[in-house]
Length: 183
Image (cartoon, rainbow, N blue to C red; front, side):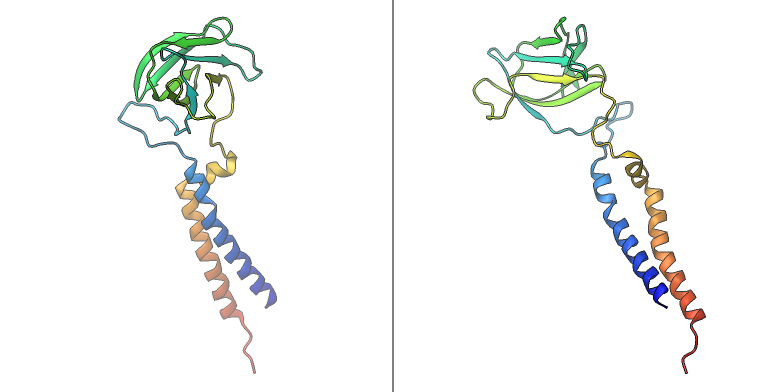
C-alpha cells in the first residue's frame, strides 16, 4: 500500500514538472518566419553603440580566438533592406559613413547582431564606441541542448501529458481492482 502511494506522488510530481519545463524552451524559439522565401532570423537583444561624428559606424570582426579577420564582407541592414555592404581591412576593422540613429542588423560571415545606434552625445552611459563581432562560433544563441530540442517538439509534449494522465489513472484502477476486502 505504501508503495502505491509513493508511486502516485512521484507521478504527480513528474506531471507538475512537465507543466513547468516547456515555458523556457518555448521562450527561446526564433521569431516567426516572414513572407515565403525569406529566412527566419532570431530575435536578439540590441546592443547600444554610439556613432562617431558624421554618423560614422566603426567596428571590428574577430574569430573566437580574438584574431582580426580581414577581407570579410559586412552588411548593414535596416529592417529587411540592405543599406550597405563593405569589407574589413587587414586588422578586421570596417567603417560606414552617414548612418543615422536607429536600430540596425549587422551581418558578417554567417554571424549577425542587432545594434541600437545613437547619434554623437545622445548615447546612454553603457554604449560602446563601436561594434565587435565574433565570427566562426559554433554556438547558437538560445541553444538548450538535446533536452530542449525534444521538449520543443509539440508531439513529445502531448505524449508526456498523455502519460502524466494515463499512468495515475492506471495505478488507481489497478489499486481498486486488487485491494483486499476489509473485514
